[in-house]
Image 1: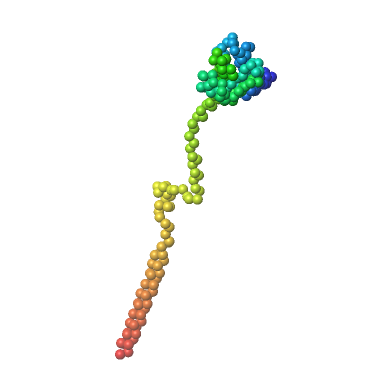
Image 2: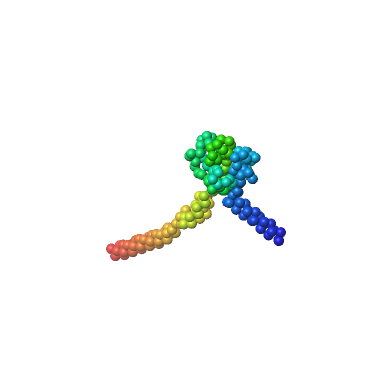
Length: 212
């Protein structure tokens, strides 16, 4: 457990140190221990080629104040050692310059003769590049199915009907039996009345004939 905490603390310190170093940058002494000299032991062009410069790095020019200066110029003025139209002039003797962007920077001596003798240098500041994030895998999103409405009853197949449903709607009970029995009773009564009337007529006629 203690070793894991120590490893985590060490990792955090390294990350913070790296970020602090990147934000503050590094300080480069132009020409090494010779400084900004007329006859350096190493050519300034070679010195610039073996170093790597980034944004926020600082150049330090050491020279005697009043004897020389450092001019930041354009590419054309660098090639022609033109000291009359500098972008910026450094004249305080121990001059510093901070790179605020990436790309090329052109430095020459404020003395045109010294510039023609090689007292100048080009520095190319590297662009800041961040590591790209890994691509996110594509995952298609399917729309959620809408819930089925509960207000309408589920559909029923014709074949799934119950036997009672297939028999059709319920019918009212038939009254034929009652009407038939009523008709039979009325018919019997009519026949009885006719027979009674016939018998009565027969008795009356018989009595009349006997009297005659």
